[in-house]
Amino acid sequence: MGKDAVLTRMKRLGLPYHYVVTATTRRRRPTESDGADYHFVSGDEFQRMLREGELLEWAEVYGNYYGVPKSEVQRALAQGSDVIVKVDVQGSATIKKVAPEAVFIFLMPPSLEKLERRLRKRHSESSYELQLRLQKAEDEAKQLPLFDYAITSQQGRLEDVIECINAIVTAEKCRVNRKPVTL
Image (tube, rainbow, N blue to C red; front, side, top):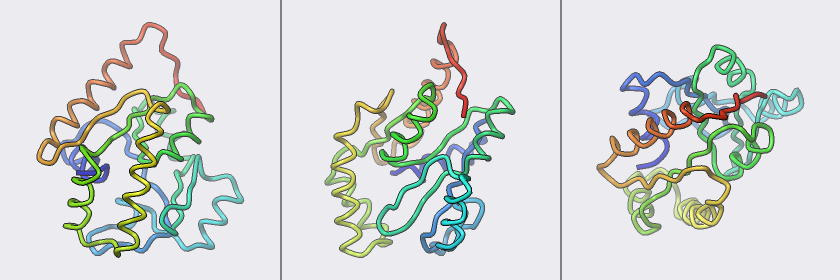
């Protein structure tokens, strides 16, 4: 179970977070909706967003571009919402430079073997893309020190992951010297 499954379940439970919708140049999968799962944009539109400074962070991943719309995060923070941004390790490192007071949670697979089995069952990547994803997962695990928390996602234990995320948010709100996130 990956980040998308966790966030989808959190939304369905109606948990009171603002879930940032990432912009991407990736092809939309049949089960995805524009504006809900991602903002699916052309390469030209993505480049315009970059030029105009509209992205908090961006990266090229598996040959596609992904970026976090800055204005969406700013609006949610201004309204006092707890904001959840789904990014990879590179994105976390970039956001940490801009907003070091943000809280970073690493969702990790129980093992690379189990991750490979889950991805193969999904049938959404070619063999080449699958190998890239597995290598990236291995590389990302080495970046664990960039994060404040790590949660291992076990198959069939989705509620446990969500419980951990809620506990982290609650604990962070109880910090004595808590600093607000600013952009």
